[in-house]
Amino acid sequence: MSELSLSSDINKLKRRVETYQEVLNNTEVYRDLWKSNFKEELINQLTEVIKSCKLTARVDVIEEMENLEAVVFNLGEIKSGLYKRVSDSIQRDLIKHNGSLIYQQLYNGKVLVLIQYPFIEGIGQPRPPHTISVYRPDSLKPSFVIRHLETFFTEITNWEDLVNDEPQKRIGFDMNFGPPEKQ
Image 1 (cartoon, rainbow, N blue to C red):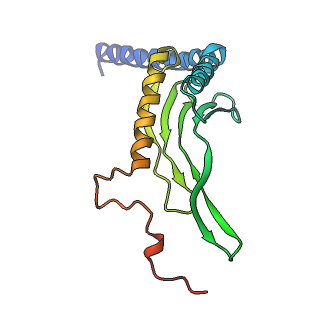
Image 2 (tube, rainbow, N blue to C red):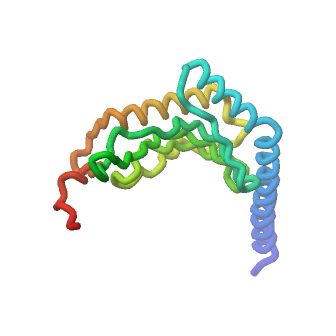
């Protein structure tokens, strides 16, 4: 191997190492941004939306793991209106989770934004979350949050209205149509 080739290879390696070190540094910067102001600003903005739109919702903060925190715009839980009769005087209500918009801090300090669709416990499987995007905390502006909320409400409205353009797709509401349970 010639010295010129080796020198060129070393320079390529140096650039990769510099890029790696820059990414590691960015992780610390993004984590600091989350802690110093991003999380609180996001909580305040989501709380203001709840007040302005007169929503029955809450902002949950999940802080179980340092640097893997989440801020959740949560529409809560309610009785679904579906229930199983246990006896003439007792019924077991099924709980409906109304959906949430999640801002999850990732291991590298960036922020994953995703939608958790509504679901009813005991009826099929919950739909997998829909990822909106991944952002650096300094690039996620208040106008983005409003757009995320618009997307969220569009998606959950479609879920509620059951606009099913895919006739082959099973939705999980066929429990009354199977063979009777043996007791």
